[in-house]
Length: 121
Image (tube, rainbow, N blue to C red; front, side, top):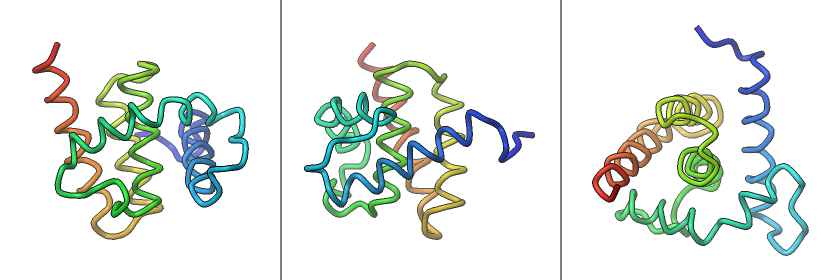
């Protein structure tokens, strides 16, 4: 079982928090940790829109959006984490920081994204 003190988990928590904070003041320079993510936001947001077509980006809870952006970046762009790991981490973050429905929404959106990417490749 994964522990909450795992350094990789703690790094994801910090990145998610930085992304969340940055969303309120996008005109400010992003921290070094989230800079690669913010550079890829158009691509990331397009992928999120494909995987959650019923919820426009502007209507997604900001904490959920930060978690989704981080997970999509890890899975699709950086490819630093296998999809299962990125999804599991995103769901855990959603359970810890999101609303009651966040975990299921994020799990569904990321699961759909994985299936869409398999079809396209």
